[in-house]
Image (cartoon, rainbow, N blue to C red; front, side):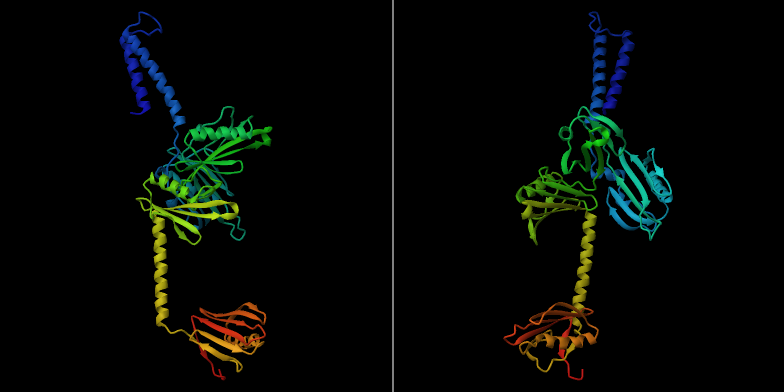
Length: 478
């Protein structure tokens, strides 16, 4: 039974007792009947429950999980305008893309799609030929839509469409320090001012949010981020010259498309919903970071796929999977000059992982097919006429070693390069100073590289190396 139902039942009982007694009980009166005494207690309970209910609604406000957000809307599956191109962000909580059209018609498309999903438009929408914006709500969730010109002078009808889910947090019910005066409150932002200093206000706001179950989730100057479930709260606290030096406080929120945890003790932290990734630096050691993620993710039935992180390149990598086959990739590496451990934790859905694996499988199949084709297809022959003064010391189908008299390497290579230029080969010269040379010639997939060493006191050495081709000697007439 809900608290509201309990209140209704108690009120009904109170009315019944009034009907039975026919009197209104007087506090402290000695001749009150037992019925009156019971009625008095019922009324006290009713009043207590009513006031308690008001306190609970503010104190127990819980930010939405990703699953709860998806029940309201999943923007990764939201319809887009016909001809939509260059999708910038496509997640549960964010959708942005470019499309040709007119602002009013484009906004009307979003409006209809949202109302069809039982979202209600709040007052204050602005729809013009130049721009359009509006705020919608459903089941406590807030969503904003904006349509503006892209600003590309070559495509004057190109629009930028942006839709953002701001979560289900009532910003006016957030715990705030005493002394704050509300300046403005709306569905997307709540603004206050106070005579207290920035430092005092920051500390007081932090204390209240922590007590309400919010976790620190990074800072950027005077902007402080907190996280609860899958909602990120932004608290901006700074000195406001326009308010006679008072401290300005504003709160806003955004729904996260992934609940990516991070330790509270970090040097700096950044979260990007477009990639569903958190990046942070920490003074902590690798073992403690691994332990944090094992314990935190383990509470939600995530498990590491290996007992220990695997070293890939310069990073230590540990992969977690959950029963739904979603994946969280943890990467760590030290940044010596800053004396920190840099950590990234990236979340990918099972569908995203499957799509990546499918793409990799297709690429591997293509590469395997190409390798088999190349293996069974003879390499094209590249004819090279050796200068008369060059002596071939080693020879294979793809590599030749030559020697020439001291001081003759550069001229000898230049003579051979002319043969390639006449046949349409392009050159990339890394160095060619007479003592050392590195030149690469290309034609399609075929490559032939020249390298030489000519110190000036011993015979010079020249190497020809072919790739995707075979070398063969050319006769003088060629």
